[in-house]
Structures are given as C-alpha cells and as structure tokens.
Image 1 (tube, rainbow, N blue to C red):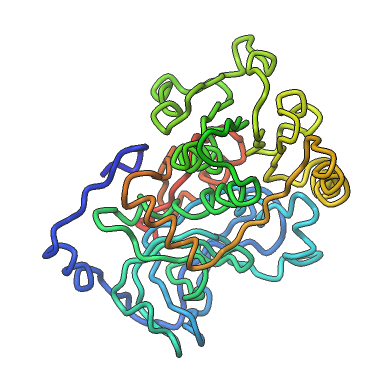
Image 2: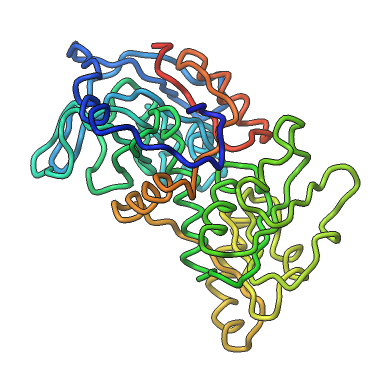
Length: 363
C-alpha cells in the first residue's frame, strides 16, 4: 500500500505469504560497526553526520533490530537541537550523552537477548525508543517489553515505521481525559503526527472531533475529514478561533501553539485543556499540578498534562487499531537515509502533514 494513503483499511495477506516473511529478509554481515546518524553537539540539521559506530548487541530482555525504515519527528528534533532547554537536563550538558539519533523504527529482528520469548529472529517489528534514541542506524537494540510490536499483516515496513511516536502521545490524551462516545473535542494543530493520530484515535472512541489546522495542501484538502473529523477549521484565509464555537469537553493543543488562556473560552464548565507541550515557563505542568485539583472540586475548567506510557500493552493496542483500519499513520514525505539532514530541515519548518519517513536504502 502507498505510504501516503491515510484512513484506509489494510487487507491481510494470505497465510502462505505471511509465513515467508521470516526468510525474505537479508541479514547484514557482522563487521563490528554500523552506519549511523550522529550529532556531537546540539544544533541544527547541519550538525548531523554519518559515521560508523560500534555494532549494538541485544542485552538481557532486548531484541536487536535491523532497521529498514525510521522517521524524523518532533522528539528527534528536540534531541538534536537541545530545545526546549529542559531536554538538556535529560540528554546531557553541555554536550549530548548519546550521539546516535532516532526514536522510531520498523525492521526485522536479527538477534534476541537473554530471557526474551516474545520475539524470534526474522520477526517484523516496529516501535519507539524515547529516552534512548538510536534508531537512525542500521541496527538498534530495544527492550522487548517496551513500545514495540509485530508489524500488522499486509503492512509494508515503511508504512508501519511512523505508527508509534505520534500515536502514543495521542493515546495519553485519551487516558488523562477519559473522552469517549458522546463527548466533543477540539484538536488544535490537527495535521501533525500527534494531531492526525489524535483525530483517528478519538474518532475510534466515538468522540465528535473538530480539527483545527493551518491551510491544508490542495492535494490533501479532505484529509482530516477522511480521518474522522466531524468539522475542519482552517485558520489561514481570515478565519480565527472565534469561528470554532464553544462547549467542548476537551481542547487539545497538539503542537504547543495554543495556550490555556486561549482555549478556556471554548471549554464547557468542567472541561479539560490538554497540551503535549510544557508551555511558556513550564506553565502547563504548573497549572496541572497546582490549579487542577481545586478546579476539579469546584467544577471549573482544568489543565491536564498527558504523560505518555511506553509499554507492550499500548503497542499491542495500537497494532490492533492499525490491523482493523481504525488508525493509519499519515505520511507526508519519504527520504533516503543519506538525505536525513534534508528531512530534519523540512520537519523544522513546522509544515509537515503527518509524518516524515526515512528508508535505509541510502546506506
């Protein structure tokens, strides 16, 4: 299926084809090194370099994956740039502690560590490795108990690669708000990786979704409606938030560009503002911790901060949604691995629609 197809149900391959996947992949020779994208200091796309690094090994509870496709997403750009500054608390100061970039991947298992029984050599898998980036490389070692699952039947690896990052942040929104059938939600910044995943996951739960975005490309003008949005509001061309309406059970900021102050008039009493961003001076965390408990008691509008989970249960849930056609990551552009700096530059513009995929054909 085309990587640019969105909101389309997958079709299962027949059993014979499915059984041959384990012998169709070509294992790489073990040379002791792998090609990887690294940065030795924080900065722009120009800091990314291609180098040979020591070949990773599957430790206890880990699998070793030969990467066939990866992505460039907001998480990767934050690791690369060290912005916002709080990232440097976790990633290292004054220089990064981990040099290899990349948090999302799809590929084939080529090694299994001790105590791993859920995966075998030859399995096709996809996942997300937040906190220990290393997926912009020919091989990556990941926890078998983390955000990883087998690729749904009938899916190409490049189509599955962007299936976890945006969706696991989107799922955190559902978890903290408890949104479900009969609720109304507004998604601001609905065309990014998180936004497009949110529209689909909310729609799958029976939530009425209003999707707010900048002007959609002419070739994808109907994208958000196809993903399940009941109403689409494009802000460019003279329309503003005043045209959106009010009374929402939740207003969700998917890009970090909508403050609680701007969202508050659109919320019903007792409704929730949720953002995937810390906000100016970390105000979204402060409001969630200090104000929301009182707001809950008084029935006022509240702020919730969606801390994501990254475990096998969530990975399996997302895989099942993909398998039945309820969720399909949207792909904007595909680059070769040797074009990785161009991909970073494009993601930095903030204009991508969905995800940017990298294939390892450029190694």
